Length: 314
Image (cartoon, rainbow, N blue to C red; front, top):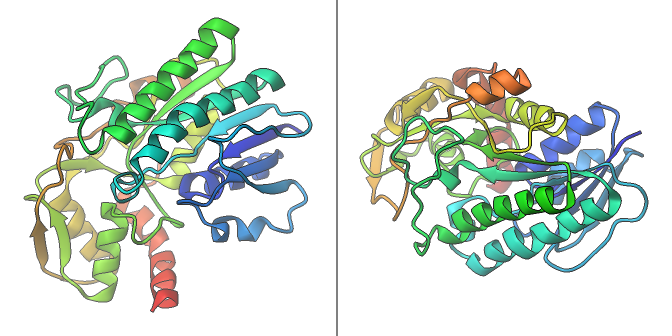
């Protein structure tokens, strides 16, 4: 059986990746220090003989016993509410943590995938964003700890590929949603879904005319899996190219929840991108991948999760 190590394996995306790899017949070792991840996300795997959970901060040196065929770095705070509170930890996980995982892959002769981000494009001057665009990032702004840690992680990953011939892959992830999102992580999907379920006004930053595109988690994980199994080493966008304003998204949430709540506007955070939409031409051509789950369908598939967690927290 192939054996994979997933750093950040108890996080939102990491836990879904654990599910996918186990379903594909892998042995999975999930590593997490639970700063933003949760044991609850992988509690359903506790009795699976092919799953192992290790509590470990990847910034600190470590190793994994036995053979390893694949290393996935899904570890990082990925929400502004997190990385604005722990900027130094965010920078370290994208630098020292990424190097420790690359070293693990090098020693074990394993393939490596770095979970990067659309934030590498910053507040883009090219739209939609294509992988050849170098970005428009403020390197000293409040969001820079995340943006620059991911850009540095990409540079380090490519250096390991060029120097050691390591089989590396870089996925630039765009806005993703689905079950196991933290309700209080500050992102627009859980924020507005929870507002609507609780009968509260939907809170929107700025005038709501900024755009995003939303990819359901199962589609995203499918793209990541296919990228790791490919021969592609340069950055690859994975996300949903259907773009909408945040106001349009709020209207969609109201329809899915069956509510008609009003909208409250809040100040726009500093350096928040005004547009975001992936060009996925490369993923289509190289991986044969594109998302198949429409937004309303994905939100409906997530609704019970948000309702259940809200009920548990009340």
